[in-house]
Image (cartoon, rainbow, N blue to C red):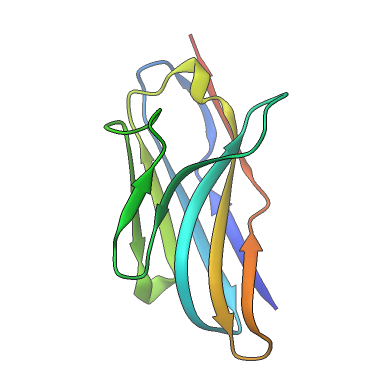
Length: 120
């Protein structure tokens, strides 16, 4: 059994900052890419940022220069530092991981989501 547990969401004013964390636990052999997605009301889920095990990153154009993704491989944890937040960043943020377990091999896992609300 593998799970991702997110934390760090909340309510913030426009221009403020939040830091999301996502820790993977369970029968993990190795983790490839980890990422953050978000889904705003009435919209499709979209990729926000992703990071490989080697540290290569990819960002949505809408967050470039404002958000930073990082990971601690020793802790199986990925972070999303969000600065200069805008009301349009309001969404449920989901953590995602592509990993290999010790039992069933390859698995894609999603977190339960954490709500980020940015007030204007």
